[in-house]
Picture 1: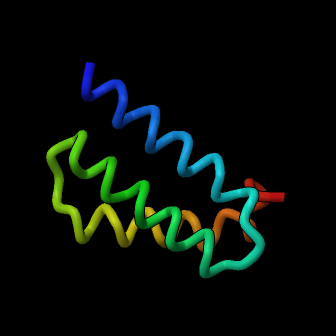
Picture 2 (picture 1 turned 90 degrees about the horizontal axis):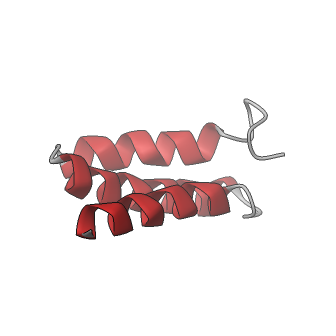
Length: 66
C-alpha cells in the first residue's frame, strides 16, 4: 500500500512539472520525483534525482510540457 502511494506521488510530481513556468522549477520537481522514485525502487538517490532533474528540465524541449 505504501509503495502505491509513493508511485502515485512520483507520477503526480512529474505531471505537474509541465505546469511550471521555468526550467528551474521543472528541474526541482523532477529531482523531487527522482528521489521518490529512488525510495520506491531502492536505487541510488543522487543518480535518480539527477535523472529526474534532467527529465524535468528538458521535458519542454522534447514537447512533453507544452
